[in-house]
Amino acid sequence: MSGRLEGRVAVVTGAGQGVGRGIALAFAREGASVVVAEFDEATGSAVAREVEALGRPALFVQCDVTRRSSVDAAVAAAVEAFGGIDVLVNNAQRAPAAPLPLMEHTEQTLDLCFDTGFRGTFHFMQACYPHLKRRRGRVINVGSGAGIDGMAGQAAYGAAKEAIRALSKTAAREWGRDGINVNVICPLAKSPGVEKLLELAPEMEKRMTAGNPIARIGDCEADIGPVAVFLASDDARYVTGHTLPADGGSTILR
Image (cartoon, rainbow, N blue to C red; front, side):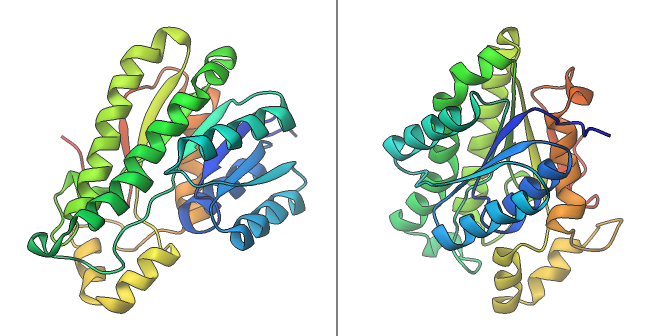
C-alpha cells in the first residue's frame, strides 16, 4: 500500500534532530524521498540513514541556512538527485539556550534568531520557488507559540517566528495561483533544544503546558510529523495561508 506522499520529494531544513527529524521520518513512512538539509554533518547523515532504513531514498546536504550560496547549493543538489522538489519544510532555527530578558538581548541575540530562522526560511523559499511552481508544491514553515503568545524571555525568538508567519501569509497570497500552498505549524515537542531549555529552566515546563488541554509536551515524530504529512499531502490541497498549532491546545487561535 502506497503512502500519502508516495513519489514526492521533500526538503526538510534543520532535520538532524528534533522536530525536523520527526517530520523527515514521518514523511519517509508515507513514501516521500527526503532531502536532509542540516548544518551538522553527523546528525544530518544519521537521519538520512534512518530514512533509508525505512526503505526510502534520502540525501544529506550540509547547509548553512544563513548563507544564500549554501542554500542555493543545497537546492541544486536536491534537484540533481531527485529531479525536482514537491515539499519544502523550513524548520531550521537557533535561539538562546535559556530564556533571556528583553533588556539582556543583544544584536548577536537578534542576529542568531533572525539569520537562522527568518532569513533561512526566506532564502529557501526563494530558492525552491521555481521547482515548487513546476510541481504545484507545498511549503510548510515552522512558527511558535512563543511568538503568538509573546512568551517572556523569548523576545528575539518569538519575533523571528512571527516574521516567518507574516512571510508565509504573503507568500500564500502571491503563490496560490502558481499552485503552491504555504502554511505554518507551531509545534510543542520535546526536541533536544526544548529538553535543554527545561534542564536550565525547569519551571518552563509548567508554563509550556499551563492551559494545555492534553497536558503534555508532544513527541517530534508521533505528534508533529503527522501534522506536517497532512499539510504536505493532497488532503490539504485547499488549505493555504494558515497557522496550525500542534501543541496539545496550548495555543488556541481566535
